Image 1: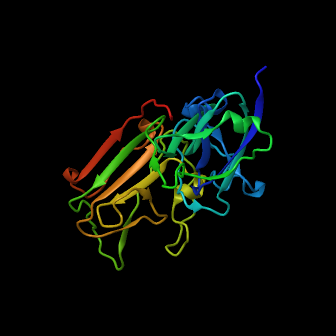
Image 2: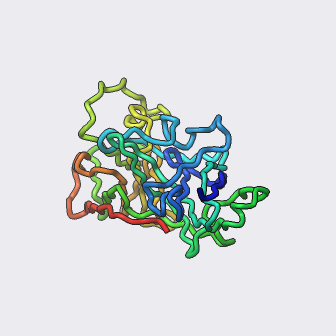
Image 3: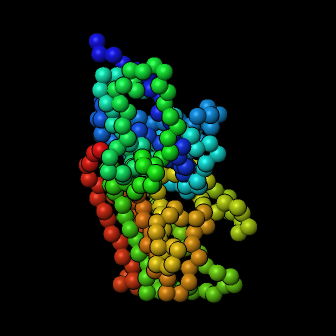
Length: 288
């Protein structure tokens, strides 16, 4: 039997709620560069296990058919993540870290990649290091295979993306009111049974996202980019949405598994030549 070695992978990585740090590599124990075989890492402090993984505390979301709901507040109380994998000690092992959202869909594990290390050469664990019992695993930093950080967004693997663009002042308010207006898009899953409506929430409440109150999950992922200096890149939309001003160009981007289960976009009082919806389909790919 070929010699093996239990090796601990340790990495520091800032995660949003619902995200999980993973490692994937060149050997079957690390998925053979297939994203569906990626190995999940857990917080180094057991008390924090599940802090970065949504509401169920197990590093995955129960996803019954398609899409949940929620916001992704960043958590970095303890950014160190770790896991132990038994590796073959007779060969070099190449690997990369990635940040994923792990979903369970009808009993099947689905891996949605959010960010991954894009340096040309992957990380390398030599056979000599695996065979040397005195060699300990280092604490690595996500994205820093070399001193310069190389991280990019993931591609569409198992999910699809719907983009909704608002431009040419498509929002018309029938009744003027004091203060500024904020826009937020919340997807509604048509496969979920209707729940009793909650009690009316006052305007002074600290939580106005009814979907978050009902489910507390971080999937699907809703992001927003605004064509303005400093805001022209996608970030998860804020709890109360984004302040809207005249001539703003908003692009909402929703990551979901099954777009057909989401209610069609509807904007009352808009001119449809100022609203564009685009669907980007998923494609199969490896991570090497």
